[in-house]
Length: 389
Image 1 (tube, one colour):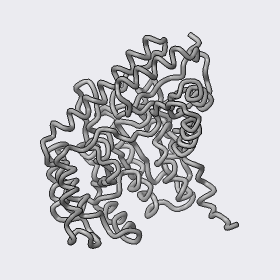
Image 2 (image 1 turned 30 degrees about the vertical axis):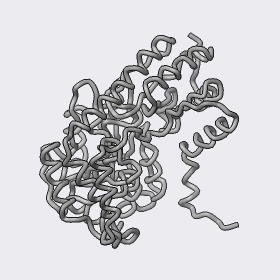
Image 3 (image 1 turned 60 degrees about the horizontal axis):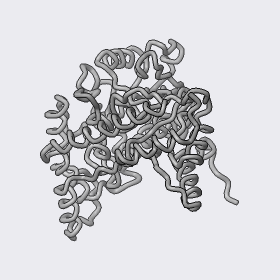
Image 4 (image 1 turned 90 degrees about the vertical axis):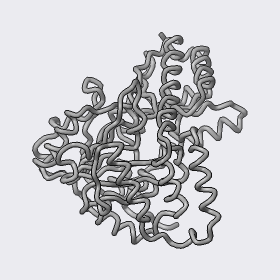
């Protein structure tokens, strides 16, 4: 049998693959599964975006290697960031990736050697930890505490760790906690990064999915951000292009140049029809974005109300497409609870421990089911006697 590398020994089976195995097992037993596990958007792109893809894939000239992003796409992203976020970008400060997950998994490779220190939020989107483990980084987990609104507090980082760290990753609106950071966080983050010469990677995949009338911002909109950082953005959730796999990393020109050069060794550029679809998505009538946000907010509201009626009180999500729920009274092990929940009710969620040590005591629901199915999930849980009251 072929021996794996040391790098592979740092990686475990992804939690979503494990949950899919469980889902398939129970489905084969004729159980109807209400799947809240993977944050796969089920709100499709607009008809116009799908039409652009359809038209562009029929053009033979679009099947060449793209090699570089088109000038049209780069210019469009410049305009998008200027209009939407008030951020001025130069062409050399913009590049595409195959969705933010691929970009983030590549982002540390050109910059981090084995043993270098990386600061990650805890709990965190699993791709952050995977990226750090792949390069053999020394990870310092910075808790996202409930008393801080689940937002990292960089003042908790010791001088010793700060002086060692090379990169810090942040992400708001946050997956899984749904937290939204205020201006003071970004100002303190930039000051922290400058003081200790730490580079910031900000994942902004959910900036358009903020609820209750609030408006998302870009990390790059804050003074000095481009000096110390870069931002990843994605069209997956906002525009329903998850399967098309297109995102962007923008900001610090040196980072963008180095990562783009690194990635040129492993790919031949973004498929041209997808570039055209991205252009259409961010230049079309943006009322579709508000409609998508409203749909997720409505699902959140139905979940909070329905679960409250059965005795499971959950705080309202501030943003993203998730609900971060404390375990019901009497439970402490999130993985054990998630397995009992799906086995007894067919409701599949992600155990909080999958996102890091600080995630224990919670489960995450992705708001990817209809309001009717959400109510059905609440009914099943209420009838299951799992809630001990």
